[in-house]
Length: 306
Image (cartoon, rainbow, N blue to C red; front, top):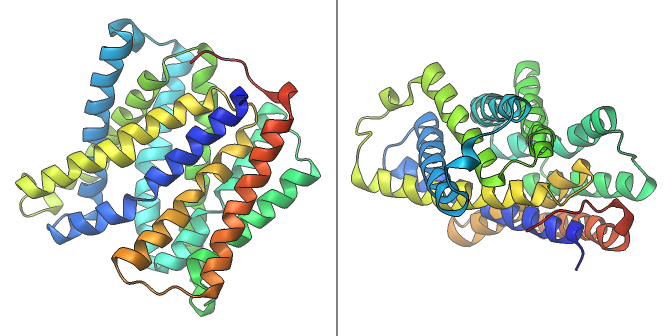
């Protein structure tokens, strides 16, 4: 198995872990948490766990990063954690879960455009087809073929597209951050630190919850920070070091929507129909198209250790 394919597999596993986000959000809501406080706890615990992991694996020297990596980490934290969480939660409240999810998964298109402009990546025919298949699959999975709710107001539409754009920038800023051979664990830790600092300054999320130090709420926040945050971002940034073409990353991670849909209809009895099943299969097929290309194109592979 070549390095590129290993990187895509790590991104794929990251998407599976991110697919549990909705589960934790719902469970924490049942404990009286708000969307901003849930996001804050996720990032705080994720940062603490990653900082401990980084120190244990690479020692204190891993936290010494170059100025370009630091700027990238600040952008990752502020844009891809702080602003993204605010835009996405607002989009869900304005547009509903299905339409909000569809607008979020405009991300692969934004990443492909940004990668073309910033990194000179080519959009060959196979990649274009895979992107179209991926977006179509995400739309069908999120909506189940019910498009009546898509008549959103212009403000809601812009906010939803903004959530897709800020999510897409995770791959772009992450690629820049990893160019200086920084520890992927340290990059992930800094990313979460600046994200929770931004949310704390802008939202003061603890004020939105009646019992912010409830034991069950904090325990769920810890599990959220471990499974869908610390482990996920450790895999994500280590995977980025092996993937040469950034536009492939959000497509591989889009399995998140599939996992979220499966959890929805198995745990929360959400509706499932043939259209959603077709959407799930299209998403998986688009990921397979990219992995096949990765396995076949050894000259595109970024050689790296680990």
